[in-house]
Length: 485
Ligand code: GLN
Image 1: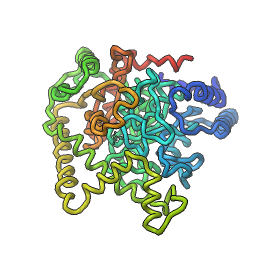
Image 2: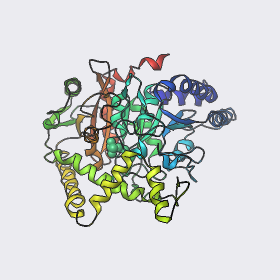
Image 3: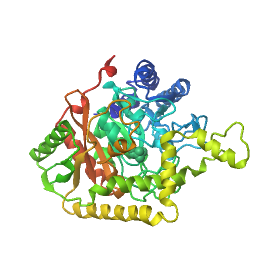
Image 4: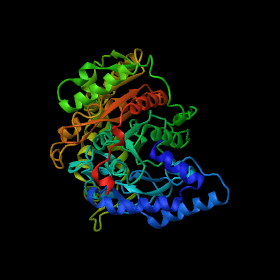
């Protein structure tokens, strides 16, 4: 049983008290976070009060929910009424939302305890969690390495075993890549599966919220809790929610796993290649049929993703103007200066770069050449996947071309940073579900993840295949030294 399930079961039965579970969690945050900087804010008093309410409920004979007493942190771009939501930006340094995100209400309805907010790249733009006003998050396996990003904080909080689960957001890989760098499970649900109401928008046609956990069964349980229809997100799907966590134990016999040879070509480190190939081999031995698939437009994915993501970002971030929201320059000259200076001072360098590039690709004269063309490529990539999925149930890929890179290594080189998303952006462009699973360690002892992608709304089948892989391995059980202090 996973850590989330375990905790909830113990609290529900009264064998554990939620106040003790949450109290221990706060202690771990206090002792471990100094080294990794995963947590932006936590509220001990509130968390303990929530926990004790839960204990009372149980003691009075009332049933507790699926996440009874489970301490959770969420990425700091998910709105909470009771704690600020900074997005790692000077723009929203003191912003407190008027409402909770849909997923926050869902977690609380399931009796989880939201302990704090976790670090991220500013407005979720980045692949390393180095672009945050709260400072960078470090990798718990080696603090000279990055955590991955943009959901580095939520990934590290789980990898360091501060909390059994967290939520992140994934626009082009921001759940899966840090999960892979930190040795935990990271799930990006199908587009439309989880409501983004209350998620600060980055690329609205790509964004999706999902969990980090230490096991597939916990990821399934978290998805079960946070998914479902919500009128306030027009992309939210009205499909029934399967009981994901109870449907995992299915045979692999006859399951078809697609492998695209071209994904294992240049740029992929040997350690990652070997571990991912070994994982595929394990699936074959366990009864899966390995089929070869083609993704002919793969090489255009990064270009298409960055054009679309930046275009959408430039539009979504137009609202931060010093009037509607957030930071306003203290001594503006005239009105134009107030807008320009508020944005100039409030946003960080990477966000500004993206707003400028996004505005450029949307401007008249360039719109057809860049934005429209990127949309056409996106359609071709989607069609590649549609035809590949005619032949298989899931497609497997690495998550990232390398293990966690060194702090500072790519900060000055945006292109190198963008290329670390080469295997993850497909799922967002095509609306697929995808998961990152621990599958080994490199020569330096850094975790390696591999990725399964399934057709839209095949989350349940993908999770059951992932679960069978996990049952054959123990990589997900290994923890960094920081987690055992
Ligand atoms: N690294 C990608 C980007 O910077 C993905 C970010 C994300 O998924 N939020 O856009």
